[in-house]
Image 1 (cartoon, one colour):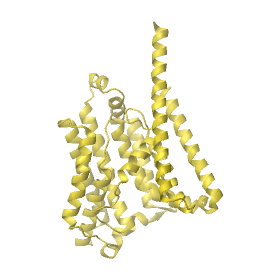
Image 2 (cartoon, rainbow, N blue to C red):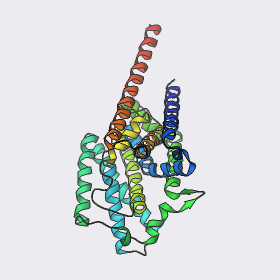
Image 3 (tube, helix red, strand yellow):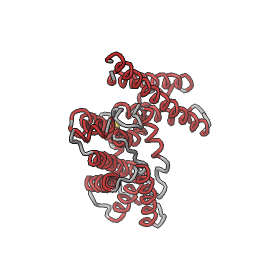
Image 4 (cartoon, one colour):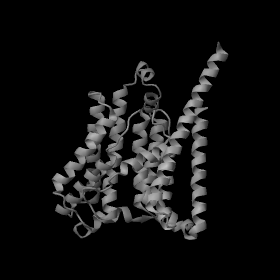
Length: 327
């Protein structure tokens, strides 16, 4: 029953995205050109990557508000490394970005697991710390395009079968983590921890350890995105991706991931990110005020939360009804 509800929500969200694109095309026909839709997907790819990690964290009844700061710190570090060692292979820079992001995710996970500090408190704190470290190591200075090597900037833009590598990276992450969350022990443990942590403990699942690995995965994806973001836009500075963590959480909520944990899919996170991506790319094109853009995005989040709450209430009524019949 639950699987049918999730699939129905994802189908409705996909339908909403298609209707939104159709409405936009009536004002700006060029928006539905394949080349433009490919650009929209490419622009949304960083959000997709971060939403996947956030979805896994939220699934375990946690939240990671430090993902954008992780992205920014990793991006600044790899940009400064490239500035100092321009001949360093891009593959090593990518490994460094993932390793640094993973380490920051592990810090969050350990604080939640070993010290039992609420995740929102931990990640608010580390978000501020990571932003502060960026200023300390950069002295508030920018790393600009002319200071970056050509190879450093080339990877996310390199095309394969008509799509940039940034888009292919997002596609690969969606496929990989769909398998991880549906076919591995960790995936099953994450759903169990989010659904009922006490029952998960009784079945031998270490709740804290599962949450630790969720934060670690989120950190690794944020680190990878840090390199991709900085190399694609060819600039690194203190406030890079400022406030982007809110878009990441919004993408998850819109995609049907329950803040209460235990409910959600990678496909939902993907569709939630695409919904926001279409809005953010389309509204400026059709001359919608930036203030209305914020209002529309906020309304979408509130509606999604209301639908989630309604679905949870409905699920509760069904359980009670079944109990009455059993009696």
